[in-house]
Image 1 (cartoon, rainbow, N blue to C red):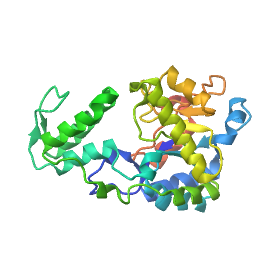
Image 2: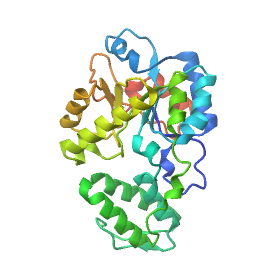
Image 3: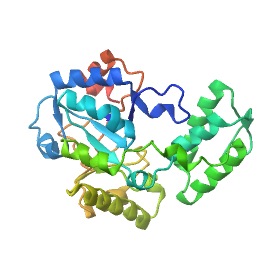
Length: 302
């Protein structure tokens, strides 16, 4: 299963959909898992593939947001559980707003009633409150489909159309965990994995850029924690966010498994190590739904 952020998104100017659970919900979910499931990590994947583990679940987090350390990490320790955190190394090295948060920030801080002139827009977007949420969702979808050499132009044009300019760097000051935090989590039994340097949609890039994102991310994490890593999570994680070239490069650089993000579950007799599926946990997921998801993934993990 996969999380991104833990906490309360109310009042945020960033992408609300990144919040997977409140502290209270996350605590209840971890309590249930600790009492009923075998919590596994990267080192257990081979046994899982061979069908040698019972009722198990792997908890993962993407990106490296600071609330993973400040809120989720203490809850995980309290329940004697572990999780795997996939880090976007560039955000730890040089904190800046991620493109999805910057798009949300532009839409939410714009004082205009909407935009009708920006690249790739097929119709006008209105900025009343429901309209802002729709606009963010649509703009994120557009961004994910862009060729890599058009993404910065798209953000610049959107900043002009919204009248906000690009987001100031200081907005990201407390957004991401630090390497010191990551090392502490690793020393306390949490696993770390790669999530590229800058969180691009890898399949939109030529092989050389894909390799750079993969290899430099792996090297940076290993240098910082003094240990090797073997797992990776694809940025965005949809079926079209990675390709065979991506998978080949992961194998070349010593990654033994990679995780997608389009739903589904992993049966031991249908194992694809470079396309291990994860189910997203969302803010609206009730504990009853959470339990159902785990008990019958064939039905609910779709």
